[in-house]
Length: 114
Image (cartoon, rainbow, N blue to C red; front, side, top):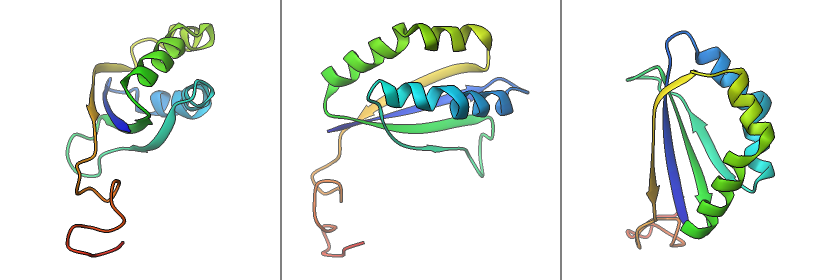
């Protein structure tokens, strides 16, 4: 199992439009392509003009296949074309849980259970 962290810097004045696009289009299209969305976050303190989210994949091959299909989807291409420029810099990281992560264990290494 791997996790993909994504961060989008929101173009000034575009936050509402970006959140609306995710709510009305992006989430449904992502789920339709098999994306396992773990959550979306916005900063409370720090860089307020960002959107963060986390996806879960079986492995890098699954991620590649599903992302390519999503990006080629004509519905997604139309959504992007209708609202260009909502984000500036975008970046992502692929993560794997450590052996001591609660994701891989029934309890924390110190025996605590959440």
